[in-house]
Length: 169
Image 1 (cartoon, one colour):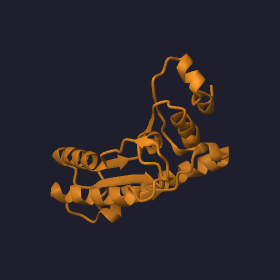
Image 2 (cartoon, helix red, strand yellow):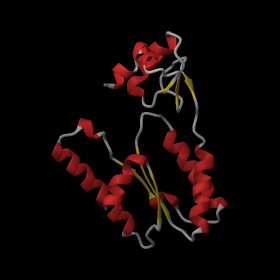
Image 3 (cartoon, helix red, strand yellow):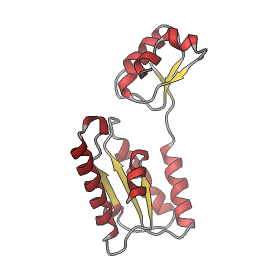
Image 4 (cartoon, helix red, strand yellow):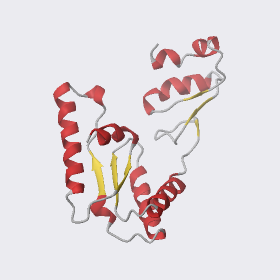
């Protein structure tokens, strides 16, 4: 069953679902249609387009501070961040500000720009086999670059999609 077929009120009612959380802007039109039909729908993040959709926002500040405290308590003094562009405007600018603030609170002082990498990571479904291979090579080159710093990072903040290639490194 495709996501578009799942986001059909008859299918959801047949499956006895009482509500749905829609992740990703690709299905926002389907989700809005369901909401307009009176089916409970929310999305976990404010959509970037104007919509009457209900959403629950993440608490990035608390998450960043908590993980930074955890890394600091474990003795990490150089924490790298691997992230990529998303359709959520300003998300990483905000995250970076919160990350720098969390470092200061943990008395970890260094230039975080040296350890912050925005990775080119287009979705696999948009790429052919050769392009996927090239994407991963660029990612590994970014890791090599970070690990070649005079004081390499000992911990990484990493977006979910980047975890698998990081573990393959």
